[in-house]
Length: 257
Image (cartoon, rainbow, N blue to C red; front, side, top):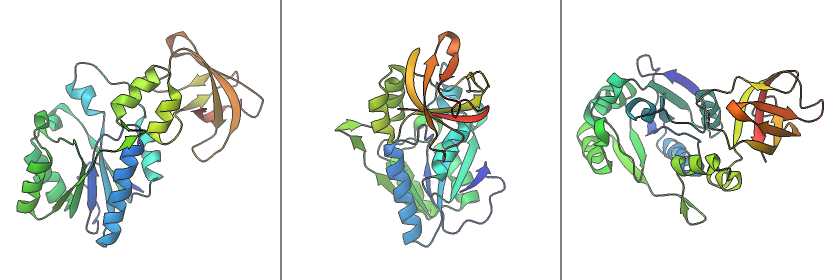
């Protein structure tokens, strides 16, 4: 997957089939959308594109920062694993937040990306004050020459899947149901010190409640790793307990079992 920062210097992309969203967690519902946009790109002889934002929009326009399921590097690693061709990371600034749906679509999606097909979720809203919905996007697509399609709601065990729901599950310590909604176990990434202390976990990364958890520790996302125990203490203090194979200093991905 090729990663692009903003729309300013995009390379030519063949018949872009795009989807837009924060994609926090890259959960089961997200994966359904990403799989469908990859299919559409293949059907139309194009390339698949996900447009996402950094920081999270609610951290800019909301009353307080949002504790997230993924850091930006984690999210990009998960997106790359879905087979998407391109990721465009948009700097979500206060100025950007004031763009209307029409301004964003015409300037960036049409004028710079040259979008061919846009796939959105069933409840997707876009632009200032979230005024852009499926109907208004479809009308703009008809005028500007691109196709707009909707992805229906995705459920797991008859429950709606959303990043907000999953954040609540993780914050409450319900990691089993969180993993079902994510489609994979919850994890965190950081750096491991020789004494087992986990360092470098970003302050905006959501952690489960304080306690002791069964985990697997690997060097990166492709490393199966080894079993260990993770203690989460006051002030987000993280300490691993396990054999020597777990406690090698360096980058670490800690997956909750």
